[in-house]
Image (cartoon, rainbow, N blue to C red):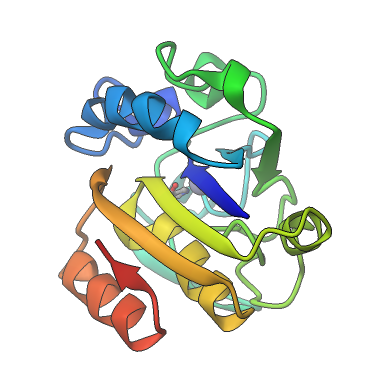
Length: 197
Ligand code: VGL
Ligand code: ZN
């Protein structure tokens, strides 16, 4: 069984959004078109309470895209984005959300960010997605979405580490590319055993 995992195709990551990824909206039509080729479709939704600790606005003297140290390790500080219930947190209006079997939200704990669809940024707190996929007999995953170098990357590496057969379809992803993060993510995914297509 093969699932399509659509990472964070939300308004705030698309042009005009609070943390816009260049060309983020270009992947919506190709993602919609491939949904019917899979046994299951899962959407992830970045879903932060206002005042989330990953927001630069919560760290006096820090600016968006600065790095800080959290109890669980280094953390990039972001503009306020994907605040629960706001239009920015909603899926891109053209994304075919009715085809989704599961929508998994992440990043909802105030003190910890969650890039990966499988584990929060402490790398140990599970989101529950692994259990969902395994109990449905799904062993093969194709990942698409935003952003290639953050949430797609962390999700793909975690999935490979959990033993799933993981591919990332680069034509249906777009990256942020902070200080070479895109190249680092691509090589890291390759080393983790992710197939880059
Ligand atoms: C993401 C930064 C902050 C992502 C989410 O979806 O890649 N990036 N929150
Ligand atoms: Zn976020």
